[in-house]
Image: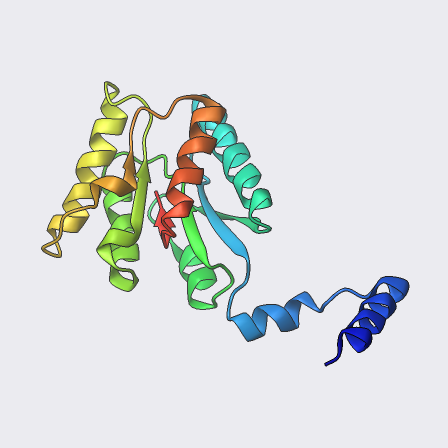
Length: 182
């Protein structure tokens, strides 16, 4: 196409306010530009600030990457909604803000290990002096051991405190293109 024709096309696009069909674009690229954020429905009020901080950091980073965050709620050991969203390819990646510090973390890690390379799953934890974070890390590791693998240290961030630190950690992890962040 000549530069003159190209210029005329761009003038028409601007004049008509044309915007590409995002659905067609997503189909052709086989991407949704959606990130699933797993939030447990069974968390108590004391955990609400943690999940709010997580969600704010995730939404901010998604917006910077022209993506949307889709909240996926889970109830204790019921991953039905998560499985449906992933199987129907409604999201490109999943970030799990799981409140369970025992088998729940292992279960959700195991689920993601079934369909993702082991070096493509990230983990974010706050203060490792807290029992809950130690337990989450141990269960995360157990899921890898169960399939004869080790988690990638470059995908694990500990000591993540506050929304700024969380945002930076999510940003660093997203540069590594994980399929899942727990």
